[in-house]
Length: 112
Length: 113
Image (cartoon, rainbow over all chains, first blue to last red; front, side, top):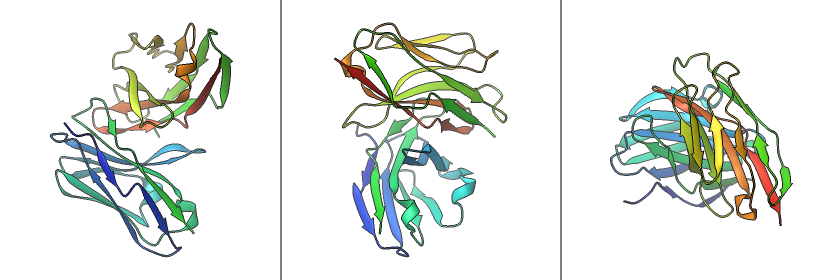
């Protein structure tokens, strides 16, 4: 089975741009998570879906961050508009129920 | 809210020394917390190291151990003798049946040969 696939691996954006990150979860997994990873904060939850329904939306990220599950095998994270402080690694993970999370390799975003 | 606090890194130890990375949690909205340690080795993605879903139980993997202590709300990671290959970033995480796992800030471990 393929693992979690995230694209692109790297993204460079100008301040104010809109960017869309993509994630394909492990086939058959019904939970999907988006996290932001920084050295200072560690992993911060952005969004959590179960069977395509939004279960949690990271409170601090609601205004410019929007995650969607278009179908059970594809999710996007839109950041609009981007700011330099958004520079980080964005991780997507999936799981089956409350079991182990399987993480993608992440997208490294740099906002100039 | 639900949160995890762990040893602030970086932590540097010599090979064959013992290691403990502290982790404490606060589970205000999770009735029956599950506790995890995840690890990111250099050049690799984040992966599960061990998990414990029942209070009082111990989990182990790759020589690491962690005991779920409900009384002290702790889940410290320990290893009796570290190896250079244990150099990585370790994350403690707290989850529940209907909650996304909350992660600590991560602890970078460097093991000197």
